[in-house]
Length: 117
Image (cartoon, rainbow, N blue to C red; front, side, top):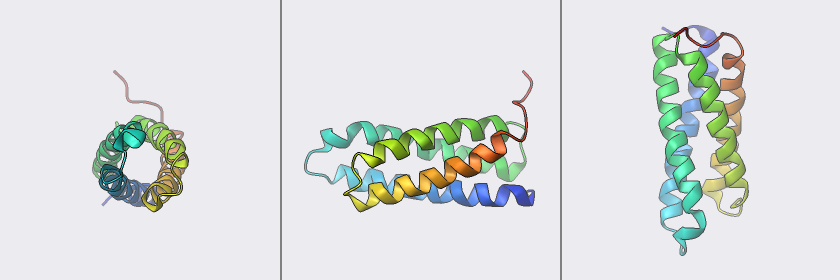
């Protein structure tokens, strides 16, 4: 079992990951995919980063903290990209989830220094 302080972050990362995947599916169904292509690329990366962050948090890995920082940055970038297409529900919901994930990951990233190399 992971430390209780991780629970909110794990939940936020899982929600962001699911919403990123939904965004990609919705974006690919848009009449002009080229308009949302950049957002699709960011969402795919964000989903992968959130997945890895969750896995490392669940293991209690020392690398979870620096990865939380990366996840927060990716989520913030995706949330801003989603704002450009806020009229599409999947985009607005993804942006909302990514902001929450960035907030939770940001808290953990500040708690510990990056793993020693």
